[in-house]
Length: 440
Ligand code: FES
Ligand SMILES: [Fe+2]
Image (tube, rainbow, N blue to C red; front, side, top):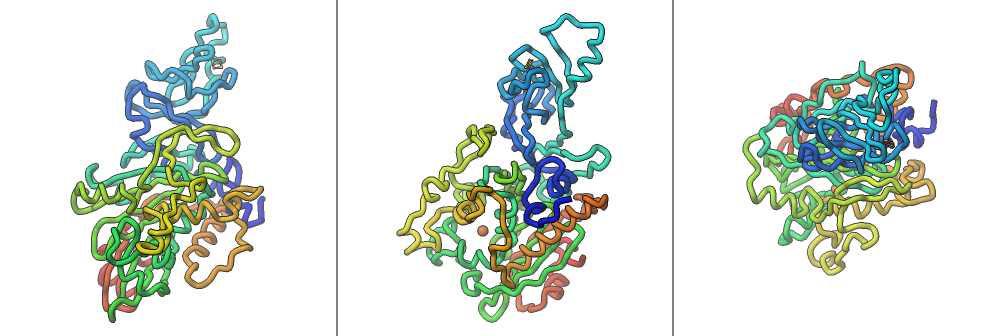
């Protein structure tokens, strides 16, 4: 059993403690939009260090199967998606969405044809399509949990938007950015007269040292961060949901909510899945345009083949602002408009996170926690790390994570100005916004 917490923390491949833990949860694999057509082009994926290919068959069902052919390991991405299966174009073998081999046309059917076809079964994982996302479950069959009950998965289609993009670091760093409330008073702050896509100009900027109260819950935890604001308090209440989801409140008093799930591609790279929704009504055109211009999603992405560190290629939305162009930092904007000189909230996060030393050392992506100096405001980060490491260690001993999305994560984040100073009291009054998720 791996004992070094940094090792446990970072490794997500098959058989690793953290990899096993993640394999107890349904995870987003790709956007429905990436496979919008029956019999359309397959999509190359890597999830938890496993190379996979997704395709939508003639009946509209999406399969996620091994990326390579069972015969001579030719890449199935170049295959023909036709008549309810993906056919390898090297010698014509074909698989359906369940991984059954349904054709071996380069041989006269031998006496043991059925047996051979059984041997040629390919790895395939159960999928589910919900909220504009294809979800995948990669764990043991008898441990398959129900789909998560996030509120945004249960609202009408026009109430929600989703996006994904590739993120160049392990999953911890961006996930921890989501639950690090004090950074928003700095990294995402802007001059009050600036376009709010370049940063926030809420009460957050006036008090950069929030008081944090955190309660563990069955889905992860909920915390309230309290800032002084004009004689009252500005509260931001945020949830962290196992194993890597956040719920982030929108602007003060508004019902718009968003958050992200960080799916490890491998130990060094991550796929971001971002949702933005309103429970009360459809998103307006302005809200959609605002989100796309940098408030929630990266403002400029390109859907293209992306080569990973070891040469394997996946199909992903990649951002135009990246490390090679210093994330298009504009020093004039930094002087006159916002704190960073970088356009877009998620780009501001990426600028720092993807440039952290452990993003490109000889052992890339491996976070060495002994090099950090964590302080009180980092408590939610410390807590999430402890929970994940403990659950991964427990699972090694045969203790299953409960409840692995069996329910209780249909929560809603809160952003509110109030004279109430105490978190429990705040929740008592406004807990309906948090949907009774307050008490552990
Ligand atoms: S390598 Fe795929 S059918 Fe031969
Ligand atoms: Fe951030």
